[in-house]
Each structure stands twice: as C-alpha cells, then as structure tokens.
Amino acid sequence: STKKIAVLVGSLRKESYNKKVALQLIKLAPESLDLEIVEIGNLAHYSEDTDNNPPKEWTDFRNKIKSADGFLFVTPEYNRSIPGALKNAIDVASRPYGQNAWDGKPGAVVSVTLGSIGAFGANHILRQSMVFLNVPMMQQPEAYIGNAHTLFDDQGNLTNEHTKKFLHSYIDAFAKWVEKF
Ligand code: FNR
Image (cartoon, rainbow, N blue to C red; front, side, top):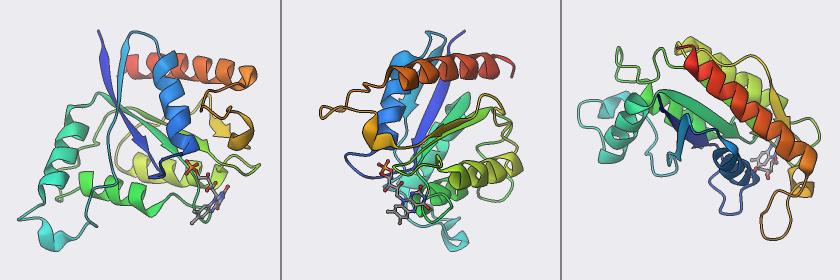
C-alpha cells in the first residue's frame, strides 16, 4: 500500500539546494511512496504558554505530521547544528506534552551543504532529537551531500550522475525501511 511521507526541508531559502535535493528525491521515489513537502517557515516559535490557544498554523502542521506514515528530512547545517526553523517545527509537533505527533513512525535524514563534510553535524543532531521522539531513523545508507553547488546546472537540474544514482538508491532503501513499520 502507498505510504504517505511528510518531507521536511530545513532551509527556507528560495534557491535552496536542500529543496532541490528534496524535489529530486520526490522525482526518483518508487510508486509506493507518496511524498509531500510540508512547510515549516510559517510556524511561530514554540512556547508552552500557547498550548491552550495554539495558532492555526501549529494545528495544521501537527495534523499533517499525525496523518503521515513517515518522515524524510532534508536539511542544511547551521553552525554545526540544524537550522532553528527546523528545530522549532520538531518542537511544535512534539507538544502539548503527551501528544507527540511524530511518535512511532519511521524517518530518515539527508543533509546537504556547500561545504565538504556533508553537514555531518546537522545530520547526527537531527537523529538525536528524532530518536528521542520515538522515530526510528534509517541507519543505512547514510546521506551526506557535500559541495551541493557543483551538482546542479543553472536551471536547478541535478547534473551529477553519481549523485543522481545515489539518491535513487537512497529513496529505494527508504521505501523498504518504511515498509517495516
Ligand atoms: C551555514 N552554512 C554551513 N555549512 C556547513 O557545512 N556547516 C555549517 O556549520 C554551516 N553554518 C552555517 C550557518 C548559517 C547561519 C548559514 C546561513 C549557513 C552554509 C550552508 O551550507 C549553505 O548556506 C547552504 O547553501 C544552505 O543550504 P540551502 O539553503 O542551499 O538549502
């Protein structure tokens, strides 16, 4: 049966390489996955003070996370961690206390950077939070996409065949991972 996957992109930038990689993964995905990018840039900063009167954007986001069968994160590294916008989205859907919308569903992370070490820090810090939220994160293959600016042409097409092949095998492995739950 088809699995609904919420795709969370850690960059809010219009020309984001992470978004470009996310769109490639969606394009290459097998039919068993129905992937959709869920916006995170419109979420107010999380505060427990607002638990009793949440903004509509929080409720909509929580419902999208609740209705998904799994999660695919595509994120840059900001200062050796994940961007604040993505951490905020993780926090929003983890609350109110006892209503963790992520709970028990499988996930995976692809990290994308202009740098050469593949946003390793962001990748592993994201795993830490998601494992705490009871999201089994795919261990292998890992995906660290470095030097992202060299992989695309001016129109935003992925021109690096090695990366395309890798992303294809990655999304196939993720489909198999999601099937296990
Ligand atoms: C960065 N960048 C960055 N890159 C990296 O590999 N490790 C890091 O710790 C950081 N830190 C960092 C902090 C801040 C505040 C910004 C804005 C950027 C560079 C980052 O990889 C680059 O901006 C990417 O292009 C971000 O991904 P998108 O926006 O293209 O998807």
